[in-house]
Image 1 (cartoon, rainbow, N blue to C red):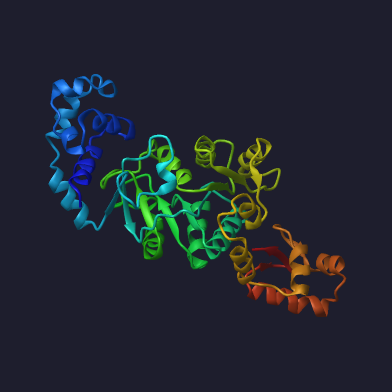
Image 2: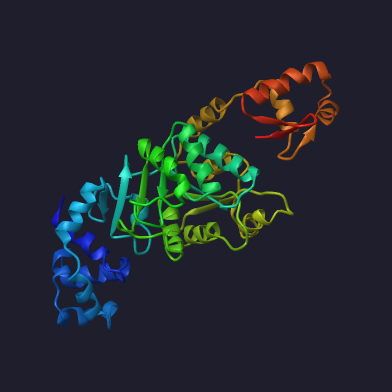
Length: 360
């Protein structure tokens, strides 16, 4: 590993240094090593470090760059720097990209990636849509980016894995921690074919202020961001805002008009976000992902026959009684029963008590 990476990691461990200040240090000092070894007089000449020279020197005395590098190796954590050829190409384009990123798993410089984000306290509808979109995008060859949070993020990561594709989880803490802890198994599974990523060094706790900062990386890694469910005040809308600032596409999934978890999506739609009913809406806007592969993927994800599709189209994302389906379809009870069973076996619908059915 290059000397630059070792000292970038050390600089990143200074509590008050972020992309702007680390960038200023290197511009003024020449290299990460020279920035690390800068004296008080030189530090005081850097506008971005005004009043912070003594604090820098105080924290520096407590950090051993070589020991911190060995710690990363013990934890099996890799590093990507702006000088690395495998640094995320899309992320490199944002304002003030992280000078160093930490990862675990199988890192690939994704150029066809879509972010899927939404509420932690999502509904069954939100989980279903996020998982299905992620699975179909993964089968179409896109990497799915999300934040490992509960709710929509979890559904998106799982959907991508079930679709046999890659997914990247961006954390708001160090990679030696899992937040939320209940997603430890999912975090491990992601590393099998994708990666977990963070700009925070090991040991960094999941503090509230880290998550908006983390969200700019989620959107920055992707060609576009899909918001599945989001209240009016939510991290998902912050991610969408970053996507707009980064000149990336924003998509939103509509939901019930009386659901507080749909109000954020509806706000985005009113402001010009692209409405998403299927991955075709995403792929039409982002043609870098092959449409033919997407169509094949959508067909492979639990393909249905002609009659089954007729029934499936009649079943909304709310419970509907079998009698209503018989009346709407014009099919007999004897014919519709086997079709409903087949759709249930394919995972497209779920039967509820009292002969009610709902889309999965």
